[in-house]
Every structure is written in C-alpha cells, then in structure tokens.
Length: 82
Image (cartoon, helix red, strand yellow):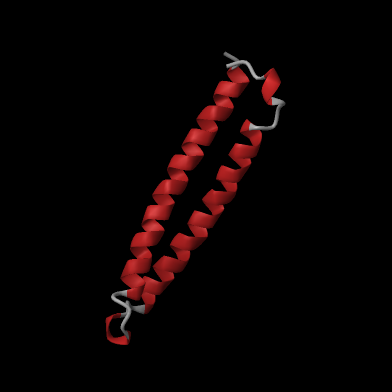
C-alpha cells in the first residue's frame, strides 16, 4: 500500500469521526435550546449560545472533512495503489 494514501485515509477517517461527534453534540444542543417547541419550554440564553457554538464547531469540522475528502481524491484513481 502507498503510505501517503494510507495517511490520507486515516486523516479522512479521523475527520469524519470528529464531524459525527460534533453533529451529535449540535443536535443535543438544539434540543436543549428549542425544547418542545413552545415559548414556555424554550431554553435559556446560555442554551442558545451553546447551540450556536456547537453549530460553528460542526461547520469548522465539516470544512476539515471536505478538505480531507479532497486530499483523498486528489490523485487519478487509476493510479492509486491500494
């Protein structure tokens, strides 16, 4: 196997794992902030701030994931050594 390819696959694997974790935390933060949808069950300002921070983190990790994906596919697939 090509060591550079293995490194890119490992980087992609780590990036997708980190993004999935951030996605889960963002989803949990949204549930805390929104509550059941009623005005009386909405979360506090801190809940909304946590949700915003979680979304920002998720988007940053999405960019990292996209870059890892592009790096993984940066070469001609016919020339890849698996």
